[in-house]
Amino acid sequence: MRMNKKTRIIAAAALTSLILATIAVASSFGSKEKTTTRVPVNLNETLTNEVSDTSALKGFDRQVKDYMTFWGLRGVSLSVMRNDSLLYSKGYGWADEKEPMEPGHIMRMASVSKLITAVGIMILQERGKLTLKDQVFGPGGILDDSLYNAAIADPRYLKITVEDLLRHKGGFSKKGGDPMFSTRWIMIQNRWKEVPTKEQLTEVQLGRQLNFEPGTWQEYSNFGYLALSMVIEKASGMSYEDFIQENVLRPAGCVNFKIGGNYYADKHPGETRYYVQKDDEPVEEFNNSGRKVTRSYGGNNVTGLLGAGAWVGSTPELALLVASIDGKSEVPDIISKESVDAMTEYFDPDTYSLGWNDTKPTGEWTRTGTFAGTSALVKYFPDGECWVFISNTSTYKGPGLAKFTTELFEKLRSRYSDKFPKRNLFYDDND
Image (cartoon, rainbow, N blue to C red; front, side):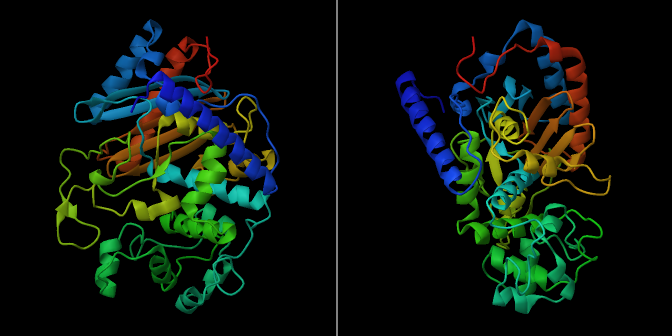
C-alpha cells in the first residue's frame, strides 16, 4: 500500500498532470474555469496514523476506541476538516485480519454514494446537458426508451423529474421490495437465471404502481438513484463510473474512489475486509445460487447499486470531496455557488436535500450510509468543521448507528476541537 520516495514523487507528478488535464477538459465542457497553484497530494499514499498522533489527543483516541468496543466495530477511519483544511485523519482497529487500519484504507460508504451522484447531476445541469425539472421517463423524457415506455404501468411515471429522484419524491414504494436489495426474489419471480441488469431492474420497477403522486411526498428510494445513474449516462454519453471519475472525483483531487465489488476476492488494493455483527446469520446469495453466504459478501449486489451505494473510498478523500462542494475557497469548488446553494437549501423537515440526507438552516449538513459490513457518516457543522466516519463493520442498529456516531462527534468536538494541529493535510506544504 505504501510507495518508496522515488515512486511517490513520480506518482505525485503524474497525479498533478492528471488533475490539471481534467480541469482543462472540464473547462472545455463549459464549466467555470478554476485555477490554483496548489494541488492536493495523494492522501491515501501520504497519510499515516503517525501523522495524527499527538499527546494532546490521547483522550480523543481512548473515546473512539471505547465507542468501537461498545458497538463491536473491527475497524474505523475518522477524518476531521475545518474550513477546507484537513486537520486530522486516522485509522483505528483492523482493516483486515492482522492488518491495522490506516487513513488511506478505502471502504464501502453505502448511501454516501448518493452525494457523489447528486454532484454529477449538478455538473451536468451547469453544462446545459439537463435541468432538474426535466422529465425522466416516457416519451420526451431523458430515459425515452421504447422498452421502458412499454413497461410503464402507471401514467404518473411521466411526471417524475430529475429533482424528484434527487429528493426521493418519485413515488416509489418498498411494498413490492426494494428492487436494489431484492435481486434474488426478482430472479425467482421472473424465472431469470442471470442477475438482472440495471435496464431489467428499471423495467421491473416501471411495471409497478407508484405509491403517491411524484413530487407530493417523499419515501427513501435506492432505485431513484440508480435511475439518476442512468440519467447521467444518457446525458453525458459516458458510463456512470467514467463520468463521475473524470468530472467529479479527479477534478476534486480524489484519485482512489472505486465502484465496489460483491466479494472479498473482488476487493480493490487498499480496501478493507467487511464484518457483520456476531449474531448475524448467513443469508441466501443474491444471485439465487442456493448458497448461504455472509451478508456482507454476496448478500447483496453492491456493484449493481451504482450511484445509489456502490462507491468505496477513504475518509480523507471523502473530506476532500466535501471541501470541493461546500462553497468555501481554501479548496476550489468543482461546482458553482448556485449549485452549492441548491444542494444545501433547506425547505422543511419533510423534504430531502439534493444528495444530502438533511441540511438545516443553521448550516449543518448530514449524509449517512449503511448496509451489511459498513456504516458511514459525513457531518458538516455550522462552524465549518466536517467530520467523516466510516467503519468496516455493521451493527444491529443499522442506520440507527448514525445517531450514536453523531453523539460521539459532539462529545469529541466539545473537548478536543481546539486541540487539533493548525495545518492542512490536503496539501504537502505543511510545517
